Image (cartoon, rainbow, N blue to C red; front, side):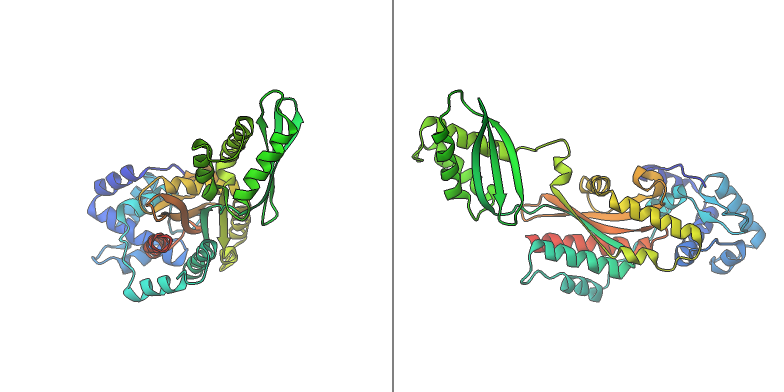
Length: 363
């Protein structure tokens, strides 16, 4: 199968360069393939095309499109299906994207209304809703919610080194090493622990950090210089990434409806493809990194098959859109994952509207 890819600009240029007849034949062929999943033959196209073309003429056009790498013939079938390059051309250059009806918009908004629910519940509901409407897997990447803290303690471990032990109310424990002044008395570590516990217990680090730092800078805290330095060092260390993968680890991946990918499996190769896709989903960090690419764009982003290394074997597509917080900053991505034979015209506006609804709810 042809797997060479083209970018959006190339796809639009190629779609423009195609003559009217090849463009119409190609568009109707891809439409028929996305609807049925079956190779499309010249007789089927002759019935779909608005103008009269003989099957022989259509076969000649299809042969030209195959030479261009836009179509291929699976096995010995007389019909043709689009390559990934062809799908990219179709999605970026020829796809006519409709709009959601007012009823569909209202239904989406009602399903993910945030009344009485936390952010993660809203995102989970939105993911389940997209999965149900698309009959594919719904997924979302969201920032990990900081847990309220239960206890903080500084423990001397070596000359000039101390361990900061942080226990959150949900039971998570994290340790960080910090540098300490030479000759620091143990009492200073205890005083720093007591000071932070009095101000952090029951709160998240982000919500309390600026207040504590302002208090230290204004010298309103009843701490000696060394203890104040330990408190500031501890806060700074807790705010830093703990490793090269920290950015990914600070994201939550929610996947719902993966079982839909098992629907309508017709041949053994489909089953093998879906098994491979399940393996791809298990590679959480790779999937998060892929979705983060959508966060860098404006609007809906589409990843098709082997254009991305993650899906080089499973031949899958993702339609994803970023959503923003109350400050207008992009904080996450929501989308749909399924085979390359997706109903792009329907799912693209669905994902786009869902992302905008989430943004409004967060605001």
